[in-house]
Image 1 (cartoon, rainbow, N blue to C red):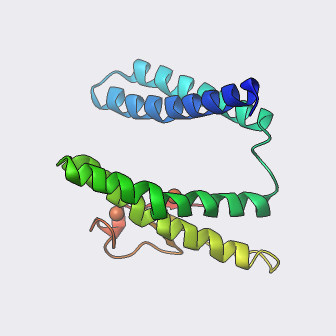
Image 2: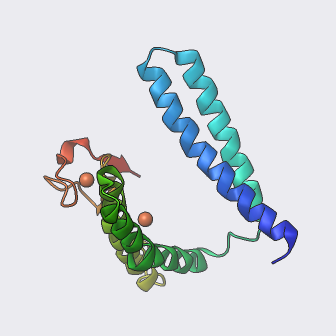
Length: 165
Ligand SMILES: [Fe+2]
Ligand SMILES: [Fe+2]
């Protein structure tokens, strides 16, 4: 890998993290009654997304949708087969309950993501379906078409799920 490619990868990772961090900081600022500070966090988060996408494009990291689906499946599969199981074991060994729970939520949901992506990849040549997804705000569990009564991963009520169109 060239120095530039390495730099683009690092910059993409850093900007992506800054985006999510600033959105979390914005929600906190809103909660604490600082709407102007929340706005700046959201504006900067938006800008970091622009930077991240520019870096990813320069990396030639966005391919055809069919290839992108396969890449997503590969990533999710690596996460639930190797990455999270190791992290869960490490967290258990160190008695880090919050980390263990967080890794467990992600691990369970990445399996679902891999299946959902695979289903659309399998049906790629057929006419496109048209239905929403529902995402659990506690664990990220992702459902097709409607929210479950109770989240099968974390037990949250279906009413709190976020609809994605
Ligand atoms: Fe995922
Ligand atoms: Fe959940």
